Length: 214
Image 1 (cartoon, rainbow, N blue to C red):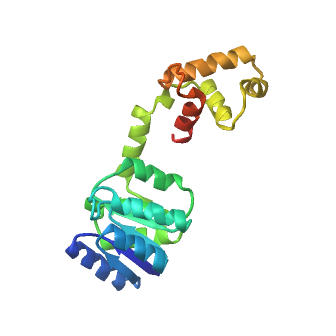
Image 2 (cartoon, one colour):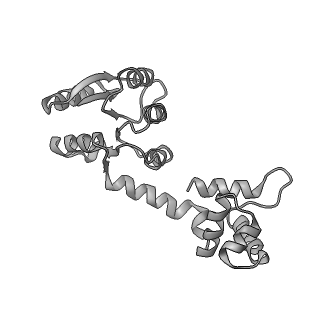
Image 3 (cartoon, one colour):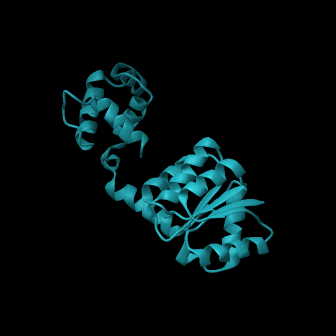
């Protein structure tokens, strides 16, 4: 099983290389920055990528962005993120991709070699390996910060049909209600999503974008 590894700290990178090789993984490349990771993933097409989130030159979310870009070029590329931080925006994008194995482990919560090796194998095989704290943070953000949580079940039904491109008339027919009722629901949706009337913005489009990004 071929692995591309990205970690900027030499001692940790070297330790991971030795650990994986001891468990019969082939290290196709071990790099310490974003540009080299991008090249390695494109040229070597490994069975799995193990990447740190924060890599040179930006030391922000370079590693995760490189991995996501590689998955767009190679749909289904298994990616295991190994980081000290939860980058919520890109973590959600990685999970929402829906193709290939994914994992997100926090470095200070990987307690033994077998746990880590098992996670790499699971992700390479198309499975998932998620630290419970990562899941907790992602769910907490959605619960407390998403305005969609304010919508009623009926309003969410209207939103789903809006996202399918249906008109108010079509939504009314589907839900067996009047167009006036649908108009009232959409008005409530716009208000709850913080979308006041505007000559410049299409509120229906903005509402659908908020729904699709949930």
